[in-house]
Image (tube, rainbow, N blue to C red; front, side, top):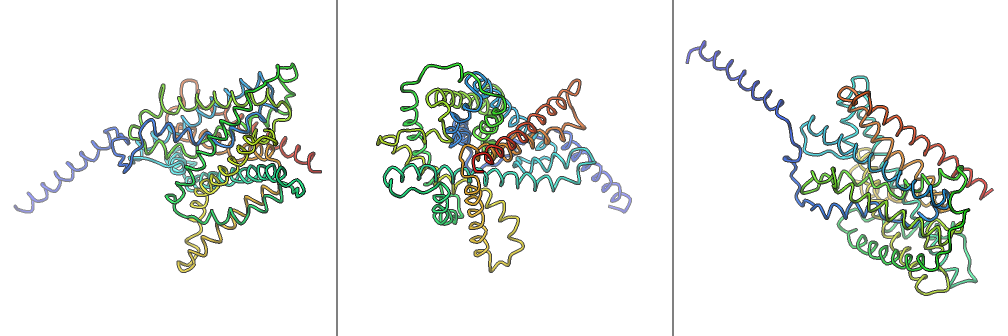
Length: 450
């Protein structure tokens, strides 16, 4: 082959490769066909994973949430919060899938979705993509740390009820019990591998199930008639309902892992779909527990309905012990994600020889932070409202709305900019929850402890 023939051959090869590459780019990329999950989760298994993330200590707080809004607006409010939470999860997952097609990757995590939405969005915001990813990570860590602070109050309040009954001569405050919990929580949080936490998860789920059954046994007995004062309360208290309901229902931090590991991810969205079926069940259960718990205990409903159970009956005391055990073991599970995120950020600043010590110090400081927050706000009901207004609303409302808007800005905002107007309304709802929830919670705290 002479030089001319060689040159012509190379030119044809280059053109052929370019055409093949362009053809590959033009062919729609299906991320589902490229996912290689070692142990995929079935559709039913995904339903239970998502259900477990939405059912927890927040369920026991729903009667107190209804106390701040009343029966009629409480029923509609629960449906509204569930609808908004479901929609925000839907737009997050839809945006993540679209970004997977554009970037030609099989799956994206929550933080990666946020980063790529800005990276492939309008030019003016692309330089912020890394910062957005860090913000999403820290928002996730904030949700977990704030939620675990609520867990500390849950455990401390239950322990106080139990010890006050068995040792009436030694009565301590909730703050004191939070202090007692510091060392045990530090020790359990030193577990660094998720597989060692599986037995704790099973035990916690069993205890929560038994607690829920016992609570229902007491709640649905002797429900008084509905008085006009229970139909609705003053509007100034409604923000505490919104922030508590958002705290209770938001499980968006586990949505992407569940969807990414499904054997058939096409069944996650759509009708019926795993997401819709789960949220309908969750909204119904939360509405029923909140409604009948409020009808049963009225304005005496506490941050955890188990605290309203009688202290002189063995079955009720068993429920309080079980919920304390369940939340204690759930604490170390919930701390796993924020500790992993924070350690990823700081490990490069620490010498490899001191990594073990660094992990111990970091985990100890994080647990101390959650206990300190619990001591600073020792009211379970108000702490749930505060954490829900700040952290859960940011992760579950603000970020999905911003991510979808950034992704659709140069593509398709719908007829008459429908997507943009809808997201503006959701953003206003987020600001309402954030500002009003924080204001009412702080005002109530100042009034209670001043």
